[in-house]
Image 1 (cartoon, rainbow, N blue to C red):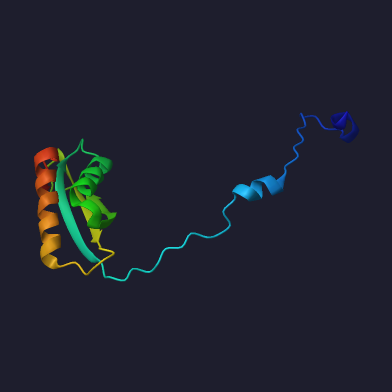
Image 2 (cartoon, rainbow, N blue to C red):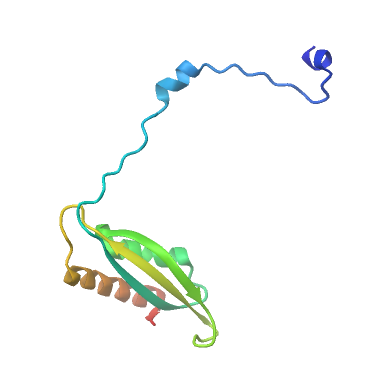
Length: 129
């Protein structure tokens, strides 16, 4: 009847929404995250890897090995070319470390970085550039 009355060619669907019910479940408070109290430490790692190793595989391994102090892993770039063997590629990772409880030391981060490098070398055949 509605289609004929309004001279519509396509099917018509009508919906009634009870917004009061939706409001019960909606979260109107924007998420809040406190500004960090302690500084972060940024480090870069540049790995030479086989072509079949994916970015996801690398990030998953780095995240698992670095542990809870690793706050961010950012893609810094991929390179294949003149200085890289034809069956290899280079990935640059930018790593950010932070503790919510204290200022980290360079020695702590160096130890974590060495653990990450060793794991990438052993499990992915990665070499530092």
